[in-house]
Image (cartoon, rainbow, N blue to C red; front, side, top):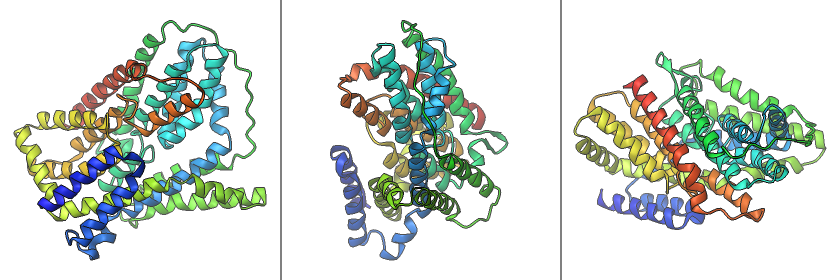
Length: 421
């Protein structure tokens, strides 16, 4: 167990210090676990959650086609015509980004909505930095609302065997979707206060033309198909992944026929984040290795000893640690590692794991909003601003990130406790 723990610790330190090489580090660690005999080679394939890999790859492809269709830009423009001033424009853009992010990857959401945020800021001659930060943190918040909203949600759904419907209604109670939306609504007063001086009027003359409605239908098809598949308890393990991949193939084929070219295929293949897929594959193998070595059980036992058997103390500990860690660490490896730990904690305390699962997801998803490097969406928004010649200081980000995160985490975690404790 000691060797496995040392390997895991070294891997995590390298993931933190060399983020540009994360997938290489994870795969190298996975190879060492196999070569050293910690994880038998015969168990490698079964440790990788292929359903998650296929879901993420397929969703990325469909989202790329959806962005190319310019439908998100058109939706945002329509939204701008409904708001009275800049304050409400920021709130509307943030809520719109959150709504899109509930069904589309957070980074993709920022890439969709950020250009409109820049255009609005330029029109009214206001600083675009806080506008884009608000879009980014809102995207992070609502990524936890549905099964396909974020990689961490996909990880939880697959690990806990939760269906698309379970995120809306779970065990006879409101699911994570309503918990997250309640937190989102409570952030509206926060944003209105932060932008209280921005009372200029909005005059948008942008006109986006959507020439292809097939990607919108495809994205709706993915969601509806996942809902339909949720109705079958004994469906094949790869069902959700195959659904997402099928719509990706269908959409790519339709685009190729429409353009009479293979260019859409090249664009879709280029849009897939292979590094994230390889990172997850490596992490699945490493987690299988430390589980095989007994590390997961030992960490779970440590949490139980610290919590002293108190369900409330354990819940607060999991949420707090998740927020603190995710403020500086990418939440994908953290959630992937902690899911089996949380399951072990629940088993040791003789209770269902869902309370702790949901606390983990809320803390890990929202904790990334505290700092500029806590989530990929934040990094993406800052990159867009820097490309436009704007400097983003840590102070600028903290001014919005801290009150936004505290409001969303406190409301979300309290609501989960009231519903599931």
